[in-house]
Structures are given as C-alpha cells and as structure tokens.
Amino acid sequence: MGRYVEIVIKLCKNEIDEKSFNCFLKEIIAMFCKYAEIKILDSYAEALCCKALDTLLSKLEEFALKAENDTNFDRWFFIWLSRTVRNYAYKYKRIKNQEEILESELYRSDAEDNAEIIFVDKTDDVFSKISSEEFIQKFYSSLDETEKQVVKLKLQGLKQKEIAEKINKSEPTVCRIIKSITEKLKKLLEK
Amino acid sequence: MNRNQKSEKNSIHINNLLKIMFDEHDLKKTKDCPELDVLIDYYLDILPPYKKNKLTQHISSCDYCREEIELMNEDEKFKNSFTEQELEQYNQIAQKFTMEILQRKIKHKIKISTGKNVIEVLKESFLFKPIYDIKSFMKSLNKALPAFAFISTKQEYLLRQTEIKGVKMTLKLTLDENQNLRVDLLFTKDLVPVDGVVVTINKEQKFHSQNGVVTFTLTPANEYDIEISLPDNTSFDFVLDVVEH
Image (cartoon, rainbow over the protein chains, first blue to last red):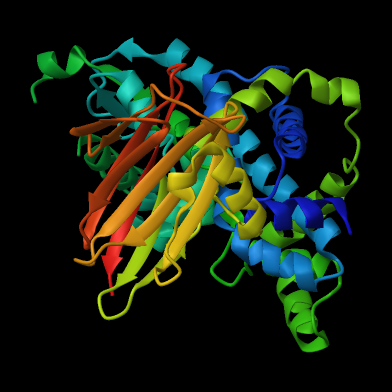
C-alpha cells in the first residue's frame, strides 16, 4: 500500500495515529515553505497553510474512495497536494511582495481625478478584505469580459497605450474601462 | 466627498491591489479548462482515449493548462526530497496544527427517528472515532465506570470516542422515552474517571463531571454548541446538530 493511500484512508476513517499525522503535516509545512521561499511560518503563512490542509480535509471522503480503487493514487495525490499547497504558498508570496510596495506607496494625495487611485481610511482593512478568496471572486465576477481582459493585461505590466493596442480600443476607452474597474473595486471595498 | 476630506485618506494604486488579488497564471484559466483532478489524470495518462484526445486539443491552445502540466512535472521532482532533518524543524508548528485541528469546531449531525429508536450520525467528524470493537471497549469501560457502560439490549445507542491530551472522552448517545437525545460523556485517564471537566452547552448551561461523567438531554431539531474544558484548561468544542427524522 502506498504511503499516501494509507494516510488518506486512515485519516478518513479517523484511525490515523498522532505520529503519522504529525509527519504528514511536517511534509505539508515543508512543501509550503519551499514554494513560498521562507524558512519559518509567520502567522499569515500559518493561516494559509491551514487553509491548504482544510482543502484536503474537505475532500477526504472523495479521496479515500479514490485511494481504495485507483492504483495510481499515491502519485496522483502527491501532485494534487503539491498543487494545492503551491497555490496557497504563491498567494503568500504575492501578498508579501506587494505588502512592501503598498506601504512604500501610501501617501496622502490630492490626485482625486486619477482613475487608477483608490482612497481608503484604513489600509489594514483593505488588505484583509482583498486577501479573501470570497472578495476576489465577487470582484472578478462583477467585471465584464473586456474589463477582465484589461485586468490581465495590467497584471502583465502593460501601460494604457499598450493595452489599447492589444484590445483594439482607443486610449480614452481603456482609461474609462480602468476607471470602471477601479469604481467597482472601490464600491466593494466600501461595503 | 470634497477634496479636503479625500486628501486625508490614504491612496492606493489599483495595480498594487490587483497584484495582491490575482495570480497571473490563474487568470489565464478559461471556462473550458478542466478541473484539477481531470488535469492530473491527463498528466498521469489515465484518461480514457476520447477524453484524452479532447483535452489534448484544448491544451494545445490553452496557456493555463499547459503551464499547469509543466508545474506538475516540476512538483514531481520534489517527491520524497525532504530529509528527516529538514522536516524536524517543523515539528513544533506541526504539533500546534494537530491540536488546532483537533480543537476546531466539528459538526456532528445526529438524526433521530421518532417512530423507532434510531440514532444515525449523518456526518462523521475528525474528532470522534467510531468504536469498532465494542466488546473489548465495553470491557475496558466496565473497569472505568460500569454504570456508564450499561446499555440495555433493547435500546439503540451510538458510541464515539476521542482522546485529547491523554484524556479519553467517550460519547454515548441514546434516545429517551420522549424521543429526546440523551448525551452521556465519560472522561477517563488510564481507565480512571476524570473530574474537574466542565461542559458548556450553547455558552449557557454548565455541567461539571461527577465520577468522570456528564449527562444532559438535547431536544431534536436544534443545533448545540458543546464546549469542553479539561482540568488542565485545554478546551475544545464541537457542534451537535440534532435532526429529527
């Protein structure tokens, strides 16, 4: 019996002993640290690591069934686990990288007409809101297809002019689209 | 909002917010992309031929799936790559996680039938283990507290057990004559009943263990928050959702 087959079946039947569970957890944490490129977990990394574990626990019954019937399960599960942990670790990296930029860029500004600026009272509140998956999902589903395309291009670091060329629209139109995206985000943040 | 009010606020460039919210790779995912499970099956070449062919076509024009497959290949290189020493440094945090998971709110749905005496657990939890070998369990229980172990042969019951910090907690559920759910909790350490355990229901009713036992009755069609504090102040809680059938 493969190692993960045993872990998953025992976990599902509530028969896993503390030592094996502890070993398995250490592996998940080590995986997270590797992908997040950190040596120790801070509280946010801990929370994300727990979320990865929650994802696994929520699928236990389904996995146990697969483990009992699928000869490839050990290999299959390792890939699934890596992908899940990697996802959360990358999220951690993304947020940590941006946290510094956010802090260095915060300033009191009069640039109220800038379509790409959002004004906020407390940056901590904004930060915790935009890190939640539910919020991200809500925001993204509120965008129309063109707006989604603009978000993708902005993430690639393209300027307004370059985005306009890519989506065959004029620069003022792109500016309006960005303003609309900003407004939608602002409204959701104010809720 | 006027200019003065606005200038007192912090301003954040939308690019920075978007970079926190979205992963460039994830945004490449389209509505035609398969679920992760299917993509793994494809990677392992265990999909039936017609599904495989269809997916091959999709992947040839999908950056997201192509990158996913590449990442799976990368991930596999790390299998069994951690040394004992590397893993050992995470021992403390792993122990903390284990406790957190054990202490997490866990939902038990107990279905009880009013027609016949039937108790059914709708959802098992990670906390309570079913007892498979009832005979030897009863034997051990009889040593601890014979009264608790007594169950009439005519009565339907349900037994579950868990162990937190060396204290064994046995949960016994039975139906009383009014079709209410009687809950008996027995706390033992090395077969000796443990006193000083406090059980709080819905943050209101408090029960103290006597001779290791706490007994209370729950009415159906209600959800109960049950918090248990052990003598060393370790506490954990779970939810009993009693559903009437």
